[in-house]
Image (tube, rainbow, N blue to C red; front, top):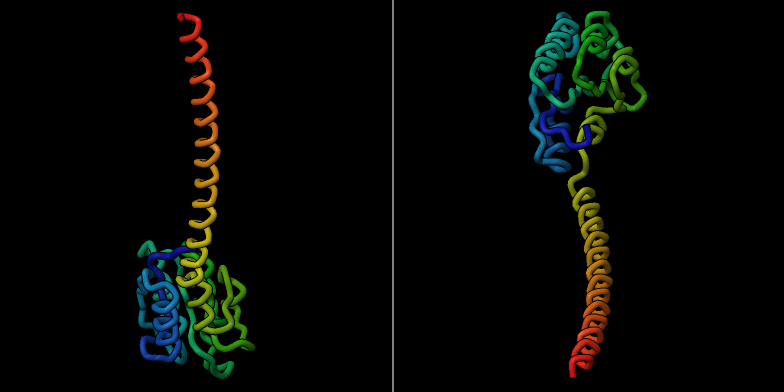
Length: 179
């Protein structure tokens, strides 16, 4: 969605990824609320933890989900290649942005998600609009509408002036006819 109000984040509650997502979202679109689902993202139990977080967030009526973690070795990212996580992403009704690893890292989750971001920071940027850019766009639209209204009012004012002159001319003719 263009203006998400509530964004779910399935990642480690203490990693750099969640800190980056919070910082970028607050800067770009502070109106968005982040709902963090603390998730184990590597090692034993990670696939189940990721899938559980996705399922819980999906039930909350959020606008979009960010699922992922920062970079690491292929072994560190392996949970995002498991059938458990892939099924959770695939069956999720809420749009998902996969945010696993760094630029060159790819997992199967990237190909099942609705969108892939090269990093968690990029996922936050994809999820929310840039407030400053939106304000500039609104100011530009306001200027266009203002100019259009001024032009319309000017045309109508000229039209009223012409109508007034026509009516005055007719009125004088009528008065002359009565003299």
